[in-house]
Image (cartoon, rainbow, N blue to C red; front, side, top):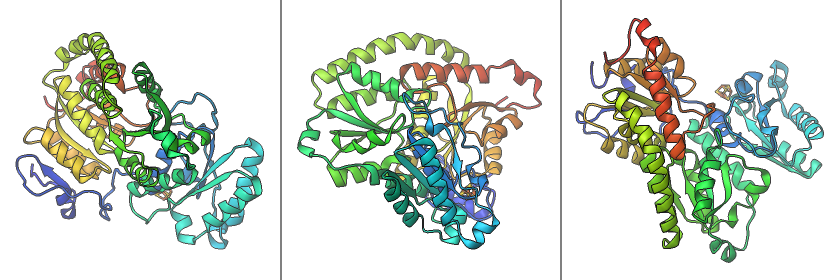
Length: 451
Ligand code: SF4
């Protein structure tokens, strides 16, 4: 297998093999025309970020197909409103595309607001809306004035970039909601915003509990279990911690620029990263007693879960994993988490990783590991089988690919129903890896990687 075995030659610079090529990996660029990218579209990027806002109406302005696979498929949990679990669309048809969809959008907002009495509506733009040029801003502004609520346009039509542009569009929409506060009071508040956690299976609540044990309270989570009210109050925090940097890096930077709130990168995936993140938060907020409380928590939880993980490690040692996930932070944490399980990562890629994240990935993996950005199914198949992987970690689009190849699969995407964050999340991850890799079903398939 060639180390640059791309599907087409233009893809070669997006693929590297550790130890065999010196050039830096190309990333953060639009997908190559002609490749069926695994990457989601701009609208999807925006929807991923905003969907967990629980009391909002999420209205997709576009053909019904764009809203497909959005009805209650997320694992994000709510402590209050369930409105976000619905998916609404203007269902644009041929006539609307010829004559314009603004009137239909206006009528749809009126109908939804009358039916659900929501205080917040997000209106997502899609590819065709970008083509026909509906004035989303004007329609949303008029609807907001008519109903006395927030109606926020999300400028996520296709052709403006890739999934990362959708993340940015979502952050811009969130910024429109945040209200200025007296920052002198806020800076001393010792409360934090948690950016880039979507409360999948209650993950934000797990971290909230850890922080509460250290005497730290969360002000706003972006966007797991958030509401229009909690988002508006985001400027009251003294620190932002950022889990999913790919989606929230822009918002963190803007909150620093506009309100002077510093930010700190964290990861609560795996034992080592969870412990280090809790220590870092304690230190940034002043250390001392906070750090002492963090150490008590880390010791207690590590002592509790490490023996369980060791049992799985004994069964999994020597296996090989392939990873293809949305963002770089998750990929970096997974390399370390697999190491805790005695598993080597032999192929790793992301949809929207940044250059500095790929540099870190390159430092962490062993020589011979294939690293790739914005992959397509042909490349994933070639590298997973060529590298002898036993397991693929990915999302909904990668699952059938793994199963067709006779490989074990772990879902690390937004539709999962079990938490993978924190100490208990590390146990869940080990358990899931074990149950799929060591499943008896593989003896009945023609091929499983690694041999
Ligand atoms: S039509 Fe455009 S906005 Fe709609 S799902 Fe497809 S790529 Fe995304």
